[in-house]
Amino acid sequence: MSITIPENLDNLDQKIQSRLEKCRAGILCPDTLKEQALKLRESMGWTHDCGLLIAAGHQPVLYHPGLLMKDVLAHALAKRYNGVAYNIVLDTDEVDLEFSYPALMDLDYSSTVTGTAAWPVQKRTARYGNSRRIVGSVEFTQTDRMRLLQACDDACRGLHLVLNPASRESARRMIQDFKRSIETAESILDPSTELRRLAHEKLGIQIRDVRASDLFDSEAFLYFATFIAERSDDFRSRYNLELARYRRERKIKNLAQPLPDLDEASGELPFWYIENGIREPLQDEGFQEAIESARAGKGKIYPRAITTSLFFRLFFCDLFIHGTGGGRYDRITENLISEFFQCDAAPFLVATASLSMQPRADLPVESRTVPEVELEMREIKFDPAQFLSTECKLRKERDDLIQQWQVARKKGQDRSELHGQFLKLRKKAGLYLKGQKKDLRKERARARYVDRARKIYGDRSYPIFYYDLSPLLSAVQNIASPQKPEKVPG
View 1: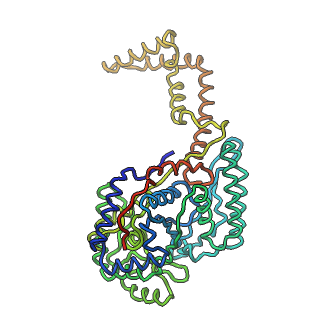
View 2: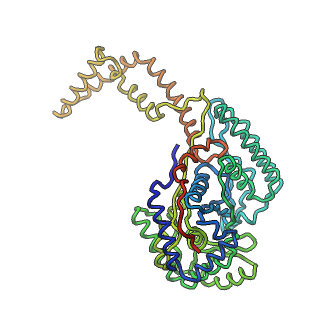
View 3: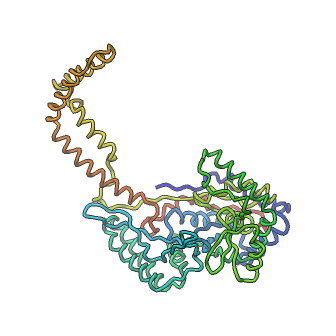
């Protein structure tokens, strides 16, 4: 089990207090930005009585513990600062939904298979390769529903192969609850939302959901996009400079990591234009037409990776929680915020978790690794006498031959006769180790089995119904101790 959450709460408290003080002093952000941010919050149901707004977010996938940890932490921090927790459902990304479960591959091994038949297949086009259709424009069909229900049934049938009885029953109950929610689902977003709701109910936490598309349809976002587009040369220059600095500090040579530069020659902008569910990159030349189309309701402008979290932190929340991937992005944006926007944004944290499933008691999960066993098998093949007792005559002959070999090598003498003697000795010694060789072959077979088992029990991507989620709550127990900020931004 591995859980990553903020440990230095004093530092976090200082960041929150600093944000409150800057807000009172009127230097948190430009006046127009501040006004637009307040309107956006209020349109999403936030009021001053709600307190600090703690936000996390992700694409609508079937959550694993690492993603759920963000919700758990958001709830705990909302309690700490007497605020409210929001989850931003990123329904503006490409369709990418997957349901994996442990299943029997043959008579001996279990492994991960993917029940993705339940989801729409991304069609290929000559221009883009993978389809650019986004989640919000994909219909949840009856065929999708039936395939996902079938995947749940398949997953239930394999529970006894890998989980202990208690974990098995817990997983089966949650899968059955999940199935009932699928039967009434109307949107492709519903399976993910309902699975999270079941987990929240089980853990006793409260999170408000808001769709990213609603945030990006706001006047605040159009103001944000226009602000960048009107200063696009400066933004591209600073953005590419920060990316270069990030790569240099981490010795990254791949120019596509963690993100590619914005192309200055074509006037590339950090936004997509969406029309009829298809997304295309925006450039300077087409921005004015795109913004007019968005205001008229004919198309939409959506942010790309960096500008997504930038917008959330500038306009929506007081504290943002990333996973490990998203955390990389905002390490790049800190200087952009202060130098390009000339203001402060909500601080961010990184949280994730890896939980292990509880295996059946009769499944071996501990052994030496396959390479370790094979190394010993190789040594016993080419130098078997070393495994004999030090009192054995063949062992002593072997040690004498090695000493003679080293002396002959130093003197530059011919060692072919010594080599021949060593081969004869190896053949004799090998006869005494047939039982040990047989045991090593058995150990290698076990190690291969255990290696597969480790891949199952160490896989962090299964949906949350396979895990005991209580360690997530235990990890934030101290964090949830209430702190009372003097005043809420806005």
